[in-house]
Length: 256
Image (cartoon, rainbow, N blue to C red):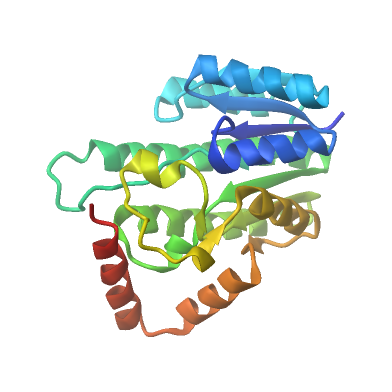
């Protein structure tokens, strides 16, 4: 059976990936920090879909934990056929804060871990001649809302570079650039998104189905929904001064 590893697989977009893949007949390896929640989600997937579900408790901000996950990706017994690099969190902090611990953690989880895990998966999959890597970037990567935008711009660009290196190996690589998605993401980050209109929001389930289909087609960039495709096209063609002004307005609207 095909086997997918999903980081941050117990909540939000990661959980939606796990459910959709299980419904399509995939077995799973779920990675998350909360052991109790991890086991509860795994048992639910086993019960609902009858899929084998392995769990790895790991905090990707901890180097030893991250390297354990990388080792699993390169394991030749029960090899991983798809990697979903989803683990991440919102950043409700100023770039001027003297305490930079949250910014450091963001770089560890959403940049370094993506780099190391994707590299491990890419080596293993290319040696077998097939596989898929999906990295959750963001539409925020084209605007300038603090370090989160910078982190996701890195993920978006890194994924395109990885796709170049793995071209012709049988490994498909996709960056997913969602907009706002109905999950617990914003609440957990302390970001006030209540003023945003309903039309900007996406359902995680719809995003995931489109991302998986785009990856199967070999698309390197997946932007879920026509409205977000249009928004990103506009964003890429606006002057950077306009993007900065838009970003300031958006950041101010999120303040609680």
